[in-house]
Length: 623
View 1 (cartoon, one colour):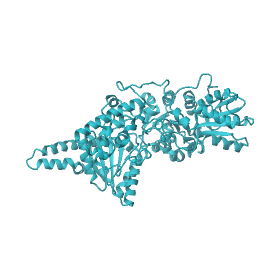
View 2 (cartoon, helix red, strand yellow):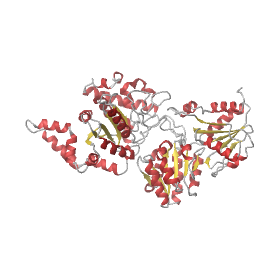
View 3 (cartoon, helix red, strand yellow):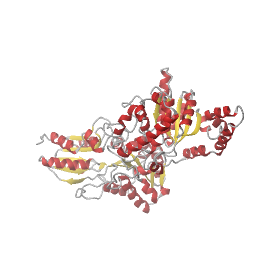
């Protein structure tokens, strides 16, 4: 059936039985494709009926649907003309795992981070009003994303604006990890409200009354927001109503008929409204239902068992970090670990197993996490905030104003730094140097491997200022014999290989590329000195002063603008030293999605490309 569905108008031709079969087919295709390509499975399985109902009831693409985060848009892609390309999901040159305006007119807005959809949708609503148009605007927001403060800023503004905006609250009791906080408790109360459940039973009994019973039942059942408003006016629904929203629900998000009826009712509403939809992550695939966290973002797996096709050779860098942090916490009761709804992704689940009371999950609220960490530090604790590099961007002001200006010992652990992979441009951590280096008092570190990361973690407990450590996902080690002296000292670099023709100053993950490029250069008669520049700020100025005018080239998996190479160049100018001959990094562009090796090639950072560029800088030609 999927081959027949190219647009919302095709869905409108299907009867209830055909729609049910379509949903089954969508689930099978989701499981098959994600098992081969990897991706976000549990969240997409949970929104199959909801997505189908949205496109059946509303007139997309004229009506605009904005998906918060966007990782749950696979079903949306399948039924909007992209089923034939779905096998290329998350592959280089193929479909993105997130909404992309360049892919389809149905993708009206690009998302990749949480809690932005209501703000964007309100912008669409106001643009419609200014242009005297009359289409509908819908924001699909998970209850996990509702832990982010932007949602409440947008709800407050939208309720005041009184313009048409439909917010679908997709309530599955989870974001990436189980939801935490007061909002989660509030939504749970809505779900299990005894008054609501008993009133529903009373309404069902109305259908047994002669003549008017069924009419009354259909009227109330089709307009649940009236019942909710009457019964819970000053308690549960009052939260949304106080903001100026009409409330519909909660309704079963896997019941197509109920979804269509409620959406049709909401479609008649000309102001802001909230539709509370209850769904189950992983719905329809037992392994994902049992382990929704594991199937939030999964590598390729065997459908029969749910097991990964290939287990990693080493624990992730995040888990290595958490294990070392746990060792420190055993001796130092001041150590507190913080996550923004990502204990598993950042590796802090390992820390939480040993110290559950000292792991704080703030929900999807990076800004709050940073300032709260500042308060912890000012209160005498030693907070470690583990966060993806691309999500760290969200707490830039808090990092400067609340942490660094007060010189507080908050440790930012920036996981997934560098070019990320299949999640694409919203998840590449390639802007953190430029955010961190200019900030007075901030120490910036970038380990070459997970062993060095652990050494850095051990060092941080002995210092009293803000520190940021950026590292990639993989926890593997540098090749044997390439680690130089292992003790980490800030402001000191390690020479991994000597060479007289050129000095390669490599930061973080580019140390491996430098070692591989050096082998290629050696075959061309060029001897390269490889330096592991794990201390980004402070730099090893003693090493720079001893370069004796030899050609120096910096290497980083980061934007060249504002990056490590630019910092070295400026510092050399200040010290009266010869500047690097070249700074190798990412030029002025966003990186797409694909395998890490493919994206290095795309950015000109593969070992072969780097070696060729170095030969050109040195005035040599390849033989």
